[in-house]
Length: 261
Length: 54
Image (cartoon, rainbow over all chains, first blue to last red; front, side, top):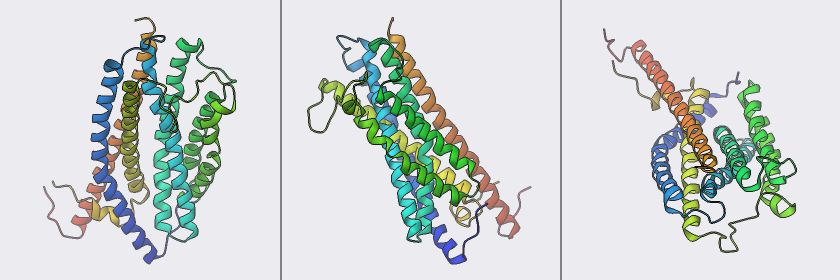
């Protein structure tokens, strides 16, 4: 059970929670629309417009699913770590409303991050079998570090549900999230630091992409669709968690009108 | 067909899991909104602001 707060502090938290919940309610439909349009366009281009690869045939189209999933698995973790760090920092400055909302946002991102990490491993295995002749190898640093990321997400989700007091859970989860941040550069630089079965960078900021322009733009469209999907589901989950966590506070009564009849 | 099965396996698992996540979240959101609307109605009735409907 959460310990009660002084009345004045509680009122300020109510205002911030209400503003955050209203923002999520307004933004979510727009993100769903953007995700639907870019997703349909990206998938159409990936499956029908881009020509098959000379060596790998149609199997190469897996990169339009694998790369967005992998990028999102890293990007979501970075966002989670940002919100976790901001939550701890705000608590230090005694901005408890900001701290609470930051931790709720951080925990709202975790399941989607875990989903994309699983999808990255799954689509990677389905790419590996026809291309490298194996589903999985334990000596490849990129593959193993991505698996560790999945365990990190699972650990963060489990830790949150294992601690009863939400404020203690916030702190513990934020610390674990920040510790796990060390894995992100390991995943990104693994193909440069070690010899891996996984291919090197196809896209960097310093060089032109090592793929046809049509494939490159299709890939970016698929990444955008996954980012919009992430924003939509994370903000939906954020709203749900806020209602669940602060259900007894005053603000949901003002925000959600009574049903008629 | 041949190796296309790998592509289809990747696509369908991704589509199903993303659809499932969206569905569960939207269902949860709806049930929470229903709960809070009922609670708000209960409050309105108990404070005498609204006439109960038979």
